[in-house]
Amino acid sequence: MSHRPLSCLSPLAFLLAVSLCLCVRAADVRVGDAGCKPDPARFDDTYQDMKDWAAAGVRGGIPDRADGKIFKTLKPGDDIQGAIDSAAKAGGGVVLLSDGTYPLDKTILLRSGVVLRGQDKEGVVLQCEIKSNEPAKKLATLRLTDVKHSGLEDLTIQNGIVALLGLNAYHEKLTGPKDDAQGNSSLHVSGVVLERAEDCWVDNCDILHSGSHPFNGQGSHVTVRDTLIDGAFNKGDGTDPAGSGNVYFIFNNGLMYNCTVKNVRHALVLRDSLSGEPCKYNVVLDCNFEGDVDFHANRKDEGHNLFEGTLIHAPAYHGWCAWSYWKKAEIGPETLVYKSLGWGGPTGPGGAGAKDKFGSTDPEKVYTYTGVHDPNVLPALDKSAPKSGTLYAVTAARPNRPDAYGAWPKTPAEALRLIDQRMIKSPLTLTAGK
Image 1 (cartoon, rainbow, N blue to C red):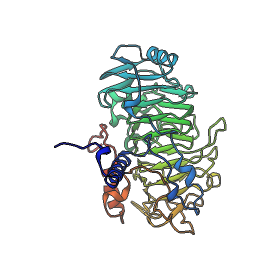
Image 2: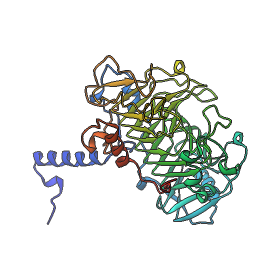
Image 3: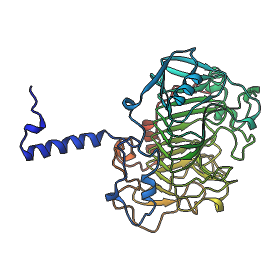
Image 4: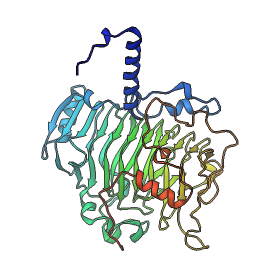
């Protein structure tokens, strides 16, 4: 079949063909991509924060894989840090890791303008072999400190010692929220740490079998997308007011999209940083959490965060309800929850499931974290839902939004089936009966 060039078509046919091409391209753009832009036509003046939420994440989007210059390709045994440093001196580029396992006895420091990418997420494993019995040292597998325009892509990151022990050695169902399970005291090493990072990203990665905090992020306009975070060995009180083994999301205009978090202490902690950087205008979109979202103040967050299309289930053995907090008076203002579900948590005096409330789940209402009731019940705003059916107004596809899977769940059982269906599948398993 021959194809005529567009220039040979009639003016009307030309316009139709161009429109079709644009529609196809728009449909290919996902949240977080370079082509994802704010959509002012869907802004609603009733919700003034929509403009800030639409600007969350990496400004300009995560660069397309094909647009990144390959600076150097490595194989197991090669010097990753040396390649990163050389790429940074040369003005940036991609350090590409060929399939294999890369043992690490020192923290990898990513530099501005450098992308560390795996050839294949399942095939490339950064295997942390660092040991520490001092939580205050906050050692990590990878660190992005004072960097801009850098990213981690298509990688698996795990603590090799924790991986050898296996989930059965440290699952919360077995050990409870504590540190140093079974006498293993040298595993106080985090997974990925960001400090003062700007326009950086973690895309299509697995962060597995972490020693302590799997992800500890602080900065501005950071995107975490299509990433599985599963397993934190230490989940006790530790030296941090929120305990060990948490996912911290301390950003200005951060975006977390289509991520799964499970087998940690707190699935997401939002609060201002110790050095005073604010936590606000973050978007948590179409994510799946087994555990709890916790506004954990010994430091207040600045509020104005958005949860949309996010499913949060706290198992009965988990110590916190799905929507949690430390001090209610220190929860930042104007954090909204829309078309999301949060349910479950520890059983109470009334017997099994006494706290398994399935409230604040009406998809036609917008809820606020301000004035949250125990357990799991968020008060509804006294205003209509956004006119466009979303509070996250961008020109990009959201194939994992809850209503793309069918009817809205009406019961905890239906919601549990949905979250199981949407979660990024994990290679970690807990042996039946354990």
